[in-house]
Every structure is written in structure tokens, then in C-alpha cells.
Image 1 (cartoon, one colour):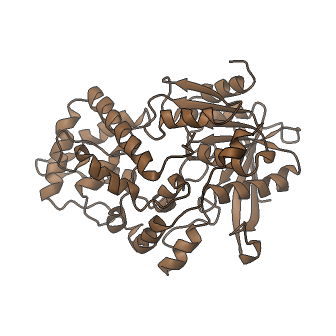
Image 2 (tube, rainbow, N blue to C red):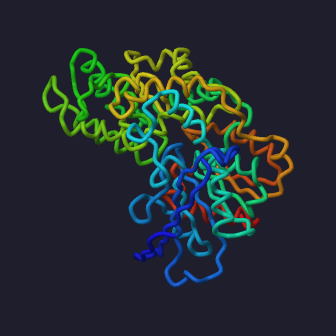
Image 3 (cartoon, one colour):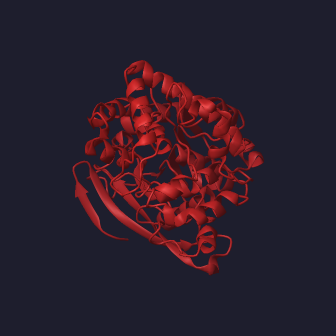
Length: 421
């Protein structure tokens, strides 16, 4: 156990635990994982049920109370002792990046094979036994955290008393190519919604793209800003607030007729750089590889969608797509290019067990967002049909970040789980 502190609304305690790097070969070395226990002040000694929170990503650390949006947390603390897990490789849980990964690409790629949802779930089970003994706990999975929750239901359902999933019911059968063919259609729809709200931004975006084709504009890290990388600003279009943020960024793009402003370039860098989450770029497609290799699926499948070509008309932003070119342009990723190629070529084992899911008795409540840019609604509903007893709430009221933006999302799921909604 590490430090403890109390701030308005939260009493926090640090927990560290050494776990096997490879759970199938526990004698082969260990890594340290970190989780923050959060409880309402005045209830630190109360006998509260545990709620494990699994963050979206992959490759993102858990929210920091008071520093990162987490509207759901106040609702959860009314009846749970919350555990914010930094999934292995993120935050304070043996972080992986260009500074910590082995210099040898093959060794680095081999290491990364142990940082998917199946390993995260096994970490969680060791944490549960360490903190709660034999008592099962609740889990709340957001986005990729929902993928992890379905893996949890496949691997260790005995560890769960209930499960909540928001925007994170994965397909049990889709290949990465299937996923991206559906994803590009969703991204195109998000572009239509964005440019319908800000129609003037189509001319601005096209002007920026044309300028980048002929001009050598540099981001703060020193690398050239390409049109393809500029298209990456669309990664946030699945979050409601990002429509406005992107518009305000484009408003200040040019400082002169033929020169982009520092304000714009720094803003772009903050959105497209993977310096703070390189693990996301390295293993994102592995989270979609359920018994197969990805082989840079997003980059291959986009060739089937010429409307996303850098010079296509009208201009379109991209979404949650990782391309090999990112590992040639982003200084945080350049040293990892060969490693990334090896990871993309790896044949990953299956993450989900359909037979075990079909026999689960764990109560599950899931929010499915109707226009979710990141997770396909039809695929999510097919998965829901394969898990008996799951209760789904399909809503167009919230975007993919609804859990962080509005405590009512978790409140609705708790009521749904208890048959009150």
C-alpha cells in the first residue's frame, strides 16, 4: 500500500502489486501494477462493495480524481469503494514507451504480447484476491474497458458480482478488416454531422490540406505536418464536445495567407501526438484481433474508401485509425516502427469464449450509443444477444464519452441492472 490523501469529495489510497509478466508462465518475471482506491470521505472504514473501473483505450491510464473528467465517480461513491486501475503498460503500472521498451524490436514486440485485455483481466483477478479476498466485485468498463469486461466474463466470471459496460460491447466474430469497413462508414457519418454543424469548416479544412501539400509546416516536435496526419484530428469526433473544440482550433489556423499559426500547430500536436500514450498506437489493432493478425488493417481497408484520400473532395477527417506512417512521423513512435510492424503481423489468440459467455450468470447492464463512432452498434447488439441476461440501453442522448460527461449514465445502468429502469 502506498500514499493516502483526502481532497474534496475523495479519500484516495495507492495500491501496488507485483504480478507475472506472463500469467501462463509466472516464474518468467514480474511487473508492478498500480491502482488507486477511492472512497467517499467518512466512509473509509465502511463495508462497501468494490467497483473496479476499466478505462477506455487501449493504452490510457485511469482517470485521476479531480484532474480528469469522470462524472460517474461521484455517483459510484454513493455505494461503492472504487478502484481505478492503471492497466499494465499505462500510468504508474510499468509504463511502456520508447524510453522503457527494449531497444531490440523483436524483444519489444515479444513483450507487448502480454499487454492485451486477457493479461489485464488476470491482473485484475490478482488484485481482487489481494484486496477483497474471495469476495467477487463489480466492474465498470468504458469503451476498451468494456472489451476487457467481456474478456473478464470469458476468463473469470467467478470474480464478478455484476458488470456495467458503456460504449464497449465488442464483436465476438468480426476480423479487424470487418471492424474497419464498418468503422469508416461511421467516421464518414461523423464527418457529415460535423460539417453540417460547421459548414464553413469544409473550406477551411480543404485550404489547410492544400497548404500542407505544398508547404513545409513543422509541429513543435520538429516533424513535418502532413495532410494524412492533419486528418487525424477527427479522432475526437465521436465525443460531443470535440465538435466545438475542433471548430475553434480551425478558426485560428492561419496567421497569414500562406502560414499556419503557432497556436494551431501546437493545438494539432496536442491532438495527434502519441507521446503520452504510445501503447495505444502500438496495440490498438490487437484489441480487435480475436484469433488473428491485424496486418495494419486500418491502413489497408482505407484503400477501399477513396473518399478518405488526403486530396478527396469533400475533405474528410479520419477517426480511430492507426497507420504505419504515424511511426515514420511522430517522434514518440519513430523508434518503435520495426516493433510495430512485428506486432501488426502477430497472430493473436482469441480474447472471447462464446460458450462460456452463453452460460454466464453474471448480471450485465450495457449502454450502447446509437451513433457511436468508435464501436459499431449492430456488432454490439449481436454480442448482447449472445450473452444471456444482459440488459441493454440503446440511446442517442449521449455520445461515446457519456459516462465521463454525465453521472446519469451510470445511474441509469445501475437502475437497469436492478430492474428499476
